[in-house]
Length: 472
Ligand code: ADP
Ligand code: MG
Image (cartoon, rainbow, N blue to C red):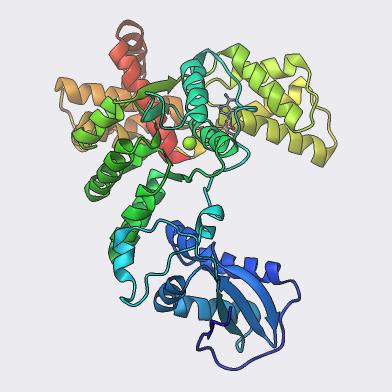
C-alpha cells in the first residue's frame, strides 16, 4: 500500500466536503460527460475513493498498469475535474491495490503495458462494471398479450440460459413504442439477477456508432473491440441505426462473429425485420436470422386495457374501467402514448385537484393526438417515402406519371394527411402545387390498395413507423 503516487497538480486548498463518496460521485459525473461509456466503465468506475486529508483526495486503483494508463491518457481530464469539483488547488493521490487476482485483459492492451510490468488487473473491474440497463424494465411489469407472445416467451428462455438456447442472436422487431426496449432490457436485468457475474452491456446502435467513431479518432480501436468481445451478453437497441454506416457495420460484424462463436448471447432490436434492413450489409442480415426473429405487434384492446390498469396502479391511481377503456380505444398504436396519457391525467389531477372523468380524459386524448402531429412535417414524410422507395424527391413534385413515382407521391400525400395537421390544400401545394381534390383522390386510392394488397399495407405501416421514429 506504500505505492503512493501523487499526480502533478499544484498546491493545496482545504475546502473538501467531508463526504468522500459524494465528492467522488460528483467527480465521476464530470468525467462521465467527457469520455465515452466504454472508457468510463473501464477506467473510472473501478476507481475507489479512500479518504481526504490535507486537501488530498486519495483513491485506490486496481494495479500499477491501471495507474499508468490513466496517468498517460486522462491526466488532463482528471486534473480539470478535481479542480472543478474541489477547487483550483486540489490534489489527487493514487494508491495501488495489493490484490493480485487476475482479470482477463486483451492482448492488445497488454501490448501497451510497459515491458517490465505485466501486473494483473483486479477482479474489481468486473464487479463495478456498469451495464447501462434501466432497472425499471422488468418482466414483472411487461404485460403479456397476443402481440408479444413469442418475443416474451423467448426472452424468458434466454434469461434462464443466456447463450445456451438456439435463440442466438435474439432479434426483436416492431413499431415505435411497442415495448422492444423494455423487453430486451428486461432480459438483461433478469440475467443479472440469475447470473450476477455475467458481463452485460446494453446500448443503442447509435451510441455504438458514436463510440466507434470516437475510438477511431483517438486511436483506441483495439480497446473498443476488446471491450465488446469480452461481454457475456451484448444487447443492442435500434440496430437499424447502423444502416449506411459501413465501417461501424464491419466492426460490429467482427464482434458479432466472435461473441457468437463463444456462445455469448446477442440480443438486438430493430424497427423492421432483418430482410427489410436495406442498406445493411447482407452478411449481417443473414447472421441476424441465425437465431430467433420475433416481432412485437401493436397490442389488442384487452392488452391495452391491461397495460393501462397496471401502469395506473403503479402510479397509485385508481381509474374507473370506462375511462381506461376510453383511452385504450382511442390510443391504439403506441404504448408510450398510453403511458403519456396516464401521466398527463395524473398531472392534471394533482396540479388542479380535478377528478378524472370522461370529459377530462377525452380532452387529454385529443391533446396527445395533437402533440403527435406537431412534430411531423410533410418534408420528413416526403424524404422518408422517397428514400424508402428509391424515388427522386424532385420527381414527386413534377408531372411524371411513372408508376413508381405515382405510388410514392400518393403514399406521401396519404401519410401527410394521416400524420400532420396540414390542410388538404397545403398538402397539395407541397406536392408540386396540386389541387386538394388530387390529395383526396390519392388518399382514397391508398386506403383502397391497403385493403386489397398486403404489400401496400406493410409499406404504409413501415413508413409510418419510420416517420414517427424519426420525429420523436
Ligand atoms: P420501443 O422500444 O418499442 O419503442 P419501449 O420499450 O420504449 O418501446 O416502450 C414504450 C413504453 O411502453 C415504455 O415505458 C414501456 O415500459 C411501455 N411498454 C411497452 N410494452 C409494454 C408491455 N407489454 N407492458 C407494459 N409496458 C409496456
Ligand atoms: Mg426503443
